Length: 257
Length: 321
Image 1: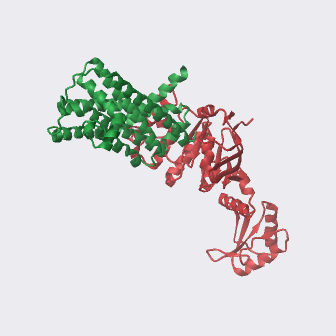
Image 2: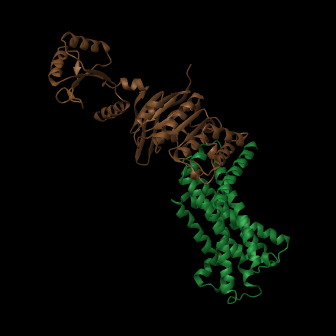
């Protein structure tokens, strides 16, 4: 048990370092808030009048998609900092320290989680200013919280992989492009049914669609669809497991441990 | 009794298509400074990476601080520390924050106090609250080493600690390394500067293409090179010819044959060199001959081989084989 406690302490120290580093570089945090917020303003102002979705105002409709974009943008920051440590010499230094190697990676993810939660909160507030009115009760908020957590963790582990494999920081930051585009190819901004056939098929089966739909239901205070929640949870847990194991394996190989 | 801090026997390491370390054997005494000298690509960094548990060797028996590298890497990590070729510091953070963080990662009981102490020791107290990105190269390197010796490791690896530093920072780095040694730390140093090895190291190993081609103290290494000469300088060409004839009579003395058998100094005087092989009696004999024949010696000097001579000669000899 003691070694578990040690492992957690190292994770907290690593996460603390990453938070401190992120704090010194407010540009990236600002970007991960500004970009989704701007998207929201643009979409609501430009298309809000054109796109009519039955029984729901457009701002209420797009908030889950915007949130996922924001989380994706946040995780790109993690990819860049992982890459910086790997290509620089910091990772090597950490590896020689008598600490659990896993703690290095979980530290990045923990930091990404904290940062992702804060930026998501800010984006939700910005959405409220734009007229976003959720009608969720406590259990709905619980579902929203779990979904946001799940997406942050999944995307952060993906970010760690990107950071470990990219040959430069520029390459690592390309994750943000993926994070911005994927929600468009889902039910995030328009219902999947109106998308062109090929995109529609993709949208129907990609994990973001079920995440977004479930989250939107929770925001609207609709009765939770258990099978949707289960499916979303499966996606999150499954992808998290795959990504984290891959990341661990890549890290070991990269550092030749 | 002198304890052995590092012992390496038959170390081999290859990457895909290249054999980097062919057969490395060395042993480092506790509390000493050991320099691994070699040109770029000789395998210095690979050796350090293996000894610091970052890279697994293909073959070889390695013990560090009494622990076996393969079976007890965790124990070894507790007693060693490394400063790599490039500074491993967080540039956006301040010097103090960097140290505090490293102290936490080393699980020290009072990170704040340890950070403070090292800032003072490494003359960084004033700069402690400035961001590292504003530090000079020498300051960064100092901070880097300070971070490495947090938690009092008993063995410190310094991989090319002065590469890229200006001469002044280099000097102060050398002083620091000496101070570290005084505090009892064993230091394993790699360098491509002969001067640095000569200044700092108790023992030196010359690594060339994955093999140690010479090993010993500076004096021992120099002794292996038959270049020790004495040079006699005379007023003019006539005298130097006469002197040479005299010295030649003694078959035991070899005159260094540079082109014509003598050389001209910048000031126009002439001289020649003789190999002494370290025997001072030979010199006395030459002085005696010259004195008896009333040949006036303007100047005399002993020429000791530099470490560079050793280095070049060893590498040449190896290539001949």
